[in-house]
Image 1 (cartoon, rainbow over the protein chains, first blue to last red):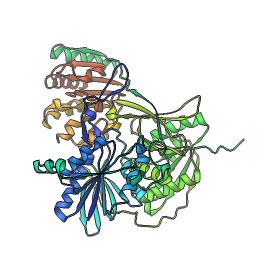
Image 2 (cartoon, rainbow over the protein chains, first blue to last red):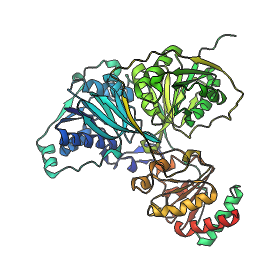
Image 3 (cartoon, rainbow over the protein chains, first blue to last red):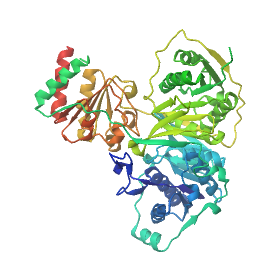
Image 4 (spheres, rainbow over the protein chains, first blue to last red):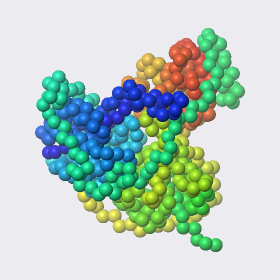
Length: 260
Length: 334
């Protein structure tokens, strides 16, 4: 069985700050990490490899620095890693990103494609389902459990108030929730070989069989026309006093607001 | 009078023959947008034996309802829903298509966007028509809520957006409203894209009602120290006739389940009163509750960011203040 896992390098959004004057993101000093949902997708693939035997291929699209997350994937145990990196792919929205990734995946032999549900820098949850549509295969999103039975996957799919247990014949794409598992750590030997012995193959524009109309900024139906820091509301009153005074103050406020 | 051909379509999500509330919120927003571009609001209702739900959609603002009633659509599955909704879009050629950013809407909308080749903007918090240009502007948070981005979809139709539940305001329902109900003929044949539903398991939740419907929320964060720590919040919520919510940290720690989680990866709420207890106020949490009418924060750390958005901030120990407050309210209730 061949499993392709799509991973993205993202800024750790917990560490992102906004320049209060310019209103732009301060990226300096913000660590880049493997997107958490993608890491769970990767772990799921590696567990299937441990249980059933599989070849696991990690794929990432991004700038050359994204090499780091692919090395991390190699150190966790993936067999091959590909970095799709070319200026021609820059500025892509979810449609162009998914077309590019689907074209890259179509060059590989695959039974299963795993992605994270969403990336923490965009939170769209769109790229996984759109890749599946471009590949013409079914997808199951929000996976909390994955099982393989012969040529079929059985997935526990999360909704707000329920789960569906769904099955689909491979090839199929599954998007993983971080609830799916606890990703393994890299081993020292894994790190050594990932950085010293193994290779991350680089694919450029010429390697991806896709029309120019479907990539990069030009192939993106959506355009970001403005970004701005979020407007925060004005703070109210803050009091620092004893317990009884605090309780009294709250009771008055609740009365003022007709809650009591 | 010239026949109006512009349409804004709204995915009227239903589960177990109940319309998901966000669909009503979308209808309210769609009506507002429709007035600016002189369009009609069309609710698209997918399911099996759900025709009786159309009246509710009219009462919340739909001019027309397109009904796709088919056994394959009884429970949500990606493929038959994608095929049906894409067929409706192909026939209606709407300007705008709106979906709730629910776990169904966020699965369906990208699959449709891929199929019909158009743009999709996720989890929008603002939708408007720009007066001078008539452009449809979609605004959404990015980078974990640190930044807002305004997005357009200039050359593809329809422009599509998912909208977070609880963000848009629904209209007051007009039970006497009526409109045209259109049965849409569908030919849905199973193919390799269809998944099979083997089983449905309902989740057990710790909250009695959906926190998005609660008028008063008492929310706890890491400062509540344990699952047991939430008991004093439950007592306060009971005294106020409210519901208990939580931050993400609490869900990650396993103290509360996800149904009560407020924030970027949880739910967006806008109750009349939000009492944040032991919640530091990460931007991801604030994104989900800052539209509340009145916010009280109780936290022992006077520099906690939650105080920046609270109408009333109390620096102090929740374990001392909350029980006393509850007791005082209980005395008043008697």
